[in-house]
Image (cartoon, rainbow, N blue to C red):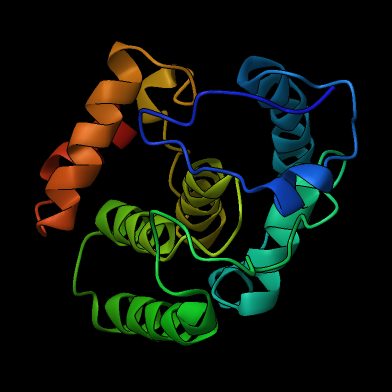
Length: 198
C-alpha cells in the first residue's frame, strides 16, 4: 500500500523517494501521517523542556537538524537531514545551508541590538526558516516549535499558542495561519505575531 494524499492547501508535496523512506509502511493517508508525526512532535517538546536549550544552542545548524530529527525520526528515515530535492516552496536545495546561516546571523543581530521585541524575533525566525523549507516535510511544525523553544528557553517568555488548534488540517485556523504567513512574506508580521499569541 503506497502513501497517497492531497498535497493542496499549503502542504509540501513529498516525492516518491521521500515516501519510500517512510518507516511505518501501513500509513496510507495524510491524516494518518499527521497523527504519527504528532506523536514525534510531542516527544520533541518533552526533550526541549528537559534540555532547555539557550539562544546560542538554538541558533545553530546542529540544533535545527536535531530538533527535526527528534520530531520525526520514528516516521521518516530522512528526519533531521536537509532535503535533497527542490520543492514548490523554499530555496533551492543547494542554498539551504547558506540561507540558514544568514538567518541565524540575522537573528543573533536582532537579539544583540534589540531590533525587535522578543516575540517578533521568534516569529520572524520561524517565518524565515519555513520560507527556507530545509526539510522534505514537517517544516511548518518545525518552524513553530523552534520559535517556541527560542521564545521560552531563549527569552524566558511563555510558549506561543499558535491559535491553540491543529494547523496541519484544513480549516479556518490553517487558513488564518496561511494568510498571516503571506502577510509576513510582505514584511508585515503583525497578524502572524497576533496569531502566535492567540
